[in-house]
Length: 415
Image 1 (cartoon, rainbow, N blue to C red):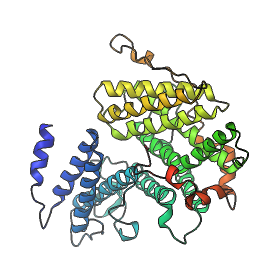
Image 2 (cartoon, one colour):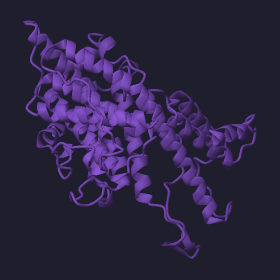
Image 3 (cartoon, rainbow, N blue to C red):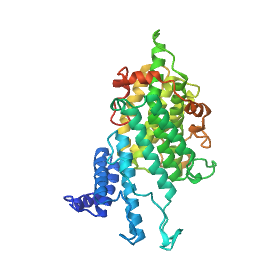
Image 4 (cartoon, one colour):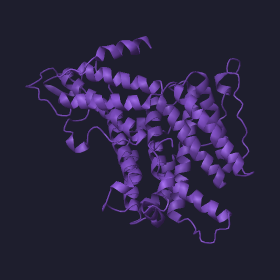
């Protein structure tokens, strides 16, 4: 808190001619704001950082003639792309507009600093940046913004392509991103090897992007089942496309919970990271819906739901502000599911005393192979190869059939 107060004082009134340290301070304050669950302040600060970067011209390349020092040139690029990642992540998680559009960006991606000006390919040993990791992040948050724009801003798109076509395209883009991911950033580790925190963070965001894209379909499938259980003769059967996409949504939620639980055991879980906590809650909500649907893997979903609730309670107890907020929502979810019928009776999850229990014994992770990611499911791959998805019910949602109930949200990841 002392650092936060001092950094806030550094800003004062915004300079008419800011320097790069102003952008750095704004980004640090934005990151800290998320850690204390001040999401809207974080969005304002990251947007201000991006606009300050634009004033500085960081979104343009600068030639060696204008700035001879290669480290300074590279620092400008990396600072801009850091602001870009923050802006995209913060904005898409809240469902708010972006500070800059991709067509306005001309600066090249982060790269290694060469040893000298005569050897552009030989890397300076002092530069330890994993360029592939940051390039993957930049591409992923770009796709994530497209997902939110395609699925959650439907009524602003006028005569654009139908929702089913836009949804299919965004999922194909995510699939292409996953296929092109470097091997060291993929989740395909043997069980006895520790998880790679960079791969975990990337793949968690990837899974959540799929969840955000397919969650409206899962909600529609739930609606069909509820209508059928009430004997509504006018209700129709959910299409094969809808079922395949809803199953992909649930599989991503299962994998997310397992990755987060495994990271907690490994000690690589970022305790006060709001996104890890948000991904956990988002996945928990999907699992609750899947439990209600009573599919073939219902018991697996029950175990994962209890696992996620336990981990969220642990985070709340150690002082994670976002977890404290989400735990209130989890209590409401459990009450609602219990009131809905006898199919769900989870009860309150008992959290063990971690002061006497070894770390390895704190969590029992449900059996789910990390070597078979949810995206590899054959039915989903076949679905995305089709020329057109059978998603007429989504087009009806655009015409206000269900829009007030399905799409009312200013937070696509948590609402």
